[in-house]
Image 1 (spheres, rainbow, N blue to C red):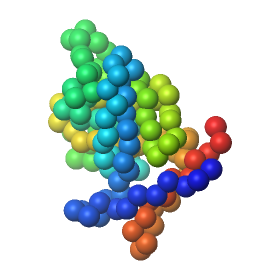
Image 2 (cartoon, one colour; image 1 turned 180 degrees about the vertical axis):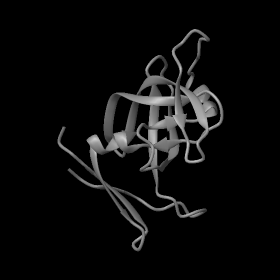
Image 3 (spheres, rainbow, N blue to C red; image 1 turned 45 degrees about the horizontal axis):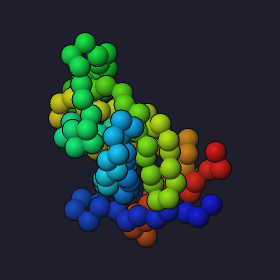
Image 4 (cartoon, one colour; image 1 turned 60 degrees about the vertical axis):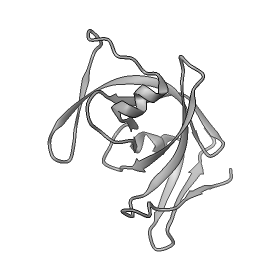
Length: 132
């Protein structure tokens, strides 16, 4: 498999990845930049990003809480999406949709599908797909 390469964010030097996401219940496939967060166990989208994708939330839906580095709990619900990194499609990929503040994160769950190399000296983030 061919590696997929990105650069570190020019603003703050965080490792990032360009992805495309399609909400399973619509035909919207949109591009996002997700910060790679090795402390985040699940890939997550901000409230605003989810709304752009057409996500909806019902008050009686089961909420979970993500604990941030500052210790604050952010409510989220799970959604299944189609997610592309380069030309690699991950169908029905489970993500967290933050119901309040939050950013867009690519979590450690991606490590099931890719070996990820963060090479700050070379300014490269390299995704090597596994054959699964």
